[in-house]
Amino acid sequence: MEKINIAVLISGNGTNLQALIDAERDALLKSGTLTLAVSDRPGAYGLERAKKAGIPAFAVERESFEETLEALLAKHKIGLIVLAGFLRILSPGFAKRWEGRVINIHPSLIPAFCGQGYYGLRVHEAVLERGVKWTGATVHYVNAVPDGGAILLQKPVAVLPCDTAQSLQQRVQREAEWELLPQAAELVCQKLAEAKK
Ligand code: GRF
Image 1 (cartoon, rainbow, N blue to C red):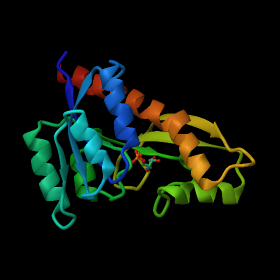
Image 2: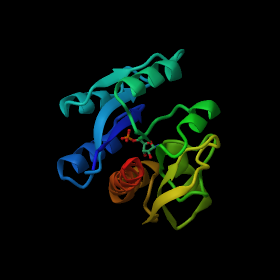
Image 3: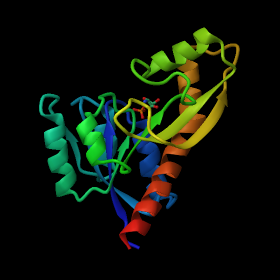
Image 4: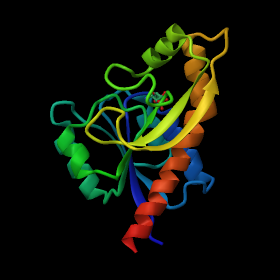
């Protein structure tokens, strides 16, 4: 079966991108191939991770972001976009055009602690403030509503009494995000490849 070309959009460190790179190396991700990495921030360390893995990587200007992105996606024949710590919200028009072909990882159990304003450490601060005993991560399809698309995979992670927002963020990444995102990417690539046959 023909593999689906994957573009990964990032804004920062890119540990989730690294999890995808490792999963492709270990053939856990086998129905898709990492083809392109794009950042909305020139200094994002994830771009270095992509280059080290031999994946073409670009920082794209914020002003004309979606226009430039669409051109890169077409040039690299991208079939699936993975948002992996990507902080910019895509326009409703873009989300509509790419419906069913964009997924995102969010560091909480949606519908808790998600939507406008819930990103990065803020999510984990809110979790601690509310005092919930379980949090986790969710991979979902992207639609026009922030964190509002259909849920693909979720994994719970316990909140410990000694947790700080930082320690919780790290545990959610290690125990849930880095495992879920490659799994979800493989699932969706399988589905898209099947539909192409
Ligand atoms: C992750 O926790 C992700 O869920 C959130 O931003 C963080 C990005 O981490 N949206 P990284 O850039 O993949 O290391």
